[in-house]
Image (cartoon, rainbow, N blue to C red; front, top):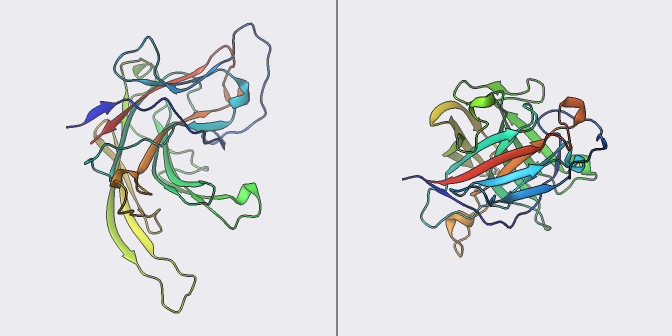
Length: 268
C-alpha cells in the first residue's frame, strides 16, 4: 500500500540556472510586500503532511531549489520514485517536480541525478545531469542529457496531467512516479585501463497512475551498493523535491505573485 509521508524540515540547496528553459536578468522592482522564502517546510495551517516551497524573492529568479534528499523507510521498493505536487501560484512555464536516482559522486558531495519536472500547462521534461570531476569551469561542471523533451522542444504535453486551475488547490495533486527497470551492465574492455562498467536501465514515467512515457538510458547513473547501509540510502536510490523559478522577463512577478508549490512524498 502506498502512503504519504512527511519529510524532515532540514534541507540542502541545489541551485541551478534555467528554471525550465528560460533565462534573463532579475527585476528588483520596488513593492511594499514582504519578500520571503519557505524551503520545504510544513505550513502551519495545512494538514496531511504537505510540504511547501514558497518564494517571492527576486534573488531566486532563474533557478531550481531542491529539498533535502529523502530517506526511504526500510523495506520499500528502491526502484520506485514517487511524489505528489500542486502548484498554487507562480508562472505556468516554470517547472516543479522530482529529482531521482541521485548519486553522490564528488569529493565535496557533488550530485548526479535525473530531474523530472512538470508545468501547470501539462508539459513535462526529463533531464540527466552528471557531475564532471575533470571540469575546468563552472559551465562544464555538469553534463546534461535530455529524455522525453529537450531544451529545443521545451518538453512534451501529457493529457494525464492536471493543469491550470484544476491543480491549483492544496488538496488536489499531480502524482508523479518513475519506475526504474534494470536491463543489463557491460564490463569495460580489459585493455581499457580507464574504462568503466556501463549500466542500462529503462525508466517508466507515470502521471496520476497512468503510463505516460518511457525511455532507456544506456549509460545510466548506477546504483552503488553499500552493504553497511540500508538499500534506501545507497547511491542511485535517493530522491528529492525540486522547484523552478523563472524571472520577470518570462512572467514571474515578485514580490506581488509568489511561487507556491505543495508536495507530498509517496513511499511504495
